[in-house]
Amino acid sequence: MTDIFIGDRKIGGEQPPFIIAELSGNHNQDFDLAIKMVDEAAACGAHAIKLQTYTADSMTLNVKNEIFTINEADSLWYGESLHALYQKAATPYEWHEPLFERAKSHGLLAFSSPFDEDAVAFLDELQVPCFKIASFELTDIPLIRAAAKTGKPLIMSTGMASLTDIEEAVNAAKACGNDSIILLKCTSTYPAKASNTNLNTIPTLRNAFGCEVGLSDHTQGIGASVASVALGASVIEKHFVLDRQAGGVDAAFSLEPEELRALVKETNTAWHALGEVKFGGSVDEEKAKQYRRSIFVSQTVRQGEMLSKDNIRIVRPAFGLAPKHWDTVLGKRAKCDLPAGKALSWEDFE
Image (tube, rainbow, N blue to C red):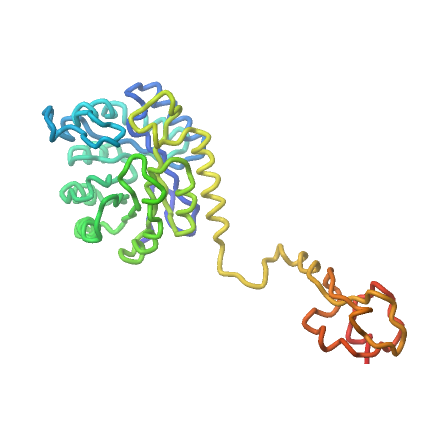
């Protein structure tokens, strides 16, 4: 598997998960709010912030008919025209550089999802450390080629994608000489249900494509993201908002600051908890072994008296003979007087 670095951060199982705070359109096109979001993401311990780089005109046509309108009744954006939605959610191009610089001032990495080849060129000029390909653009092979040709790592979400879709995207990047690929398991519903998240796909993705795999998580809360670490997720992306009640195009499935802080903490805890395959107890458990059970004299035994259930017992702590010797000890005769509370040893009986 190719070693992948985003900036100076190595991505992989030997590192805690790389946490990306996706600002999306939750800034409501308020620059000061966007700056505050970057500041808060840094304060919460995220490792990177991500934008989306497009205009309404680069995403769709300004046509108002049924085809260009969101008609799914259960959609957060039901009834919106695609052009109007993207116009409302877009991050102005002139914001990118100051937002990236603000992130860097906090030690955060900063990059974006380009949605067309011009956006790739624009972001490359800003020296982003990587590119994120959104799930809906995974089948846009020309876009993937343009990003791959920069030589920078590609993080590609796989929502809705078949194995063939993913293979074509990966092969397109590799054909451009770019092997620095991270795939994100993703469910492209907003919000996504835990029951549709299918985290068990993560190891299969890694094995099938020989690359790092993470999670782009659209569920509410942090449970799915924390669980993904146990399956090997090395990157986790969550949408971020300062206040869900204040709104934002993705607010319903975005994390507030305290939740993002918890995500960073708990995914780090989960990663540390994975450890290695280990039997026999850890070094820290050695002292605890004394509180196992062993055989003790429970009532005074006189010299020559037989050891029986009436005068010996298996109790804590573990300073006497191990319980597995119980059948061997029963019926033996004491070599000397044995006081109650004595840990039984081989020297105590014939």
